[in-house]
Length: 268
Ligand SMILES: [Fe+2]
Image (cartoon, rainbow, N blue to C red; front, side, top):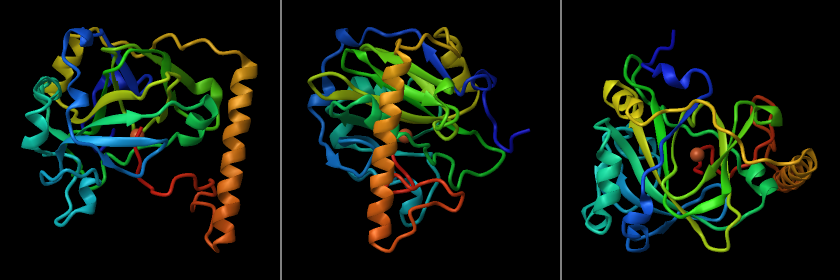
């Protein structure tokens, strides 16, 4: 038994993909909001709609004073006024919302996305006995050839799912369980709404009303393409380890795995 309340539908794979909504019928609100630079995986910027205390910043809620878990995000009026439909979509489940932000991701390569894979720290300071935090990803731009890469084991490509990202894709992911990153092949940036939700009866009802699938077909790739990506990612890991070692820093975490990200916490 988990010490947190989790939804059964995530047990099999750690994610569910819902029926798409008609994003193309909505205005492009993501072009109107204010973005801030934020250290993350890949070349990214973020536009927060809800933050720890209502400021336009993207730090984890636990890094504030007083620290808090990834719940009870404070909506930022100057942002939600410019993105009322996206705000409504984030609030629609009726679940407690923590961080809510739009990510802007520049195009990258498969191997770079593998290098960027990480797990989120959504449940730091979350009181046991309450709902486990999962995250919703609503793809805003029509990125039919791009994918959300998910892995149960970051070193095992056979555990990989590549979720295609046409506009209106709705994926809800236990990003503290699954390694994840996006491979974005477009010529223009990709935009996606990311919302932290508390697991509970409200979120469950919302998901069940939208045909949740715990397995989807991956975008096809050849073994050669995957191997080339793995080689590129491993080269970047080795280069980073060498750079850390040259600075006199330990290139490995306590569990022996190579440090990849600057920050323990990151985004996709
Ligand atoms: Fe993430």
